[in-house]
Amino acid sequence: MESRIYMIGYMGAGKTTIGRRLASMVRYPFIDLDQYIEKAHGTSVTDIFLDRGEEYFRVLEQRYLKKVTHLQQAVIACGGGTPCFYDNLEVMLKSGLVIYLKQSINVLHQRLIDQQMQRPLLMGMDESQLAAFINQNVTRREQFYLQAHLIFEPEKETLEQLVDRLSLFNKGG
Image (cartoon, rainbow, N blue to C red; front, top):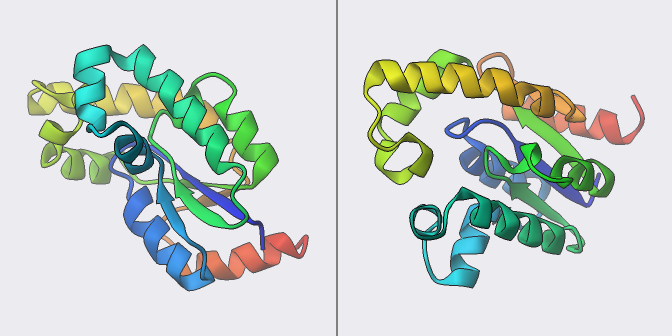
């Protein structure tokens, strides 16, 4: 099995939750890239966005992504925008297995309604603005997400089936 497995997908897709479960199943350490950045900087991603801006955060994100590429084994949950900036996607594709966690727009909308205060890009939006924002951004980002080695749709497949596919993928099947 690949030594690094990157989970990508839109915010609210479940990358951290499913990534933790996957890490447990394959017996790899789990790293949430946002939490890794927060721990290193002693402040939340939300505060970094609010205090320093998105561009500053994306530079940090790139730096910490490159650090985790040196780990021997890990399941890494990336931020929703991680693969869309700089050479991040290329770095992930070359250094491990990239899995796109694909959720429907409806699932994302339902989850993100409850998480708006923890998501700096969503703060202050009403429900219709949120729906339009999600739809527009998923559409724009999907060109990056679809370059993943594997696509996992939790509404259509179990995590156990994904693990089976990982085994087949690593055998060249």
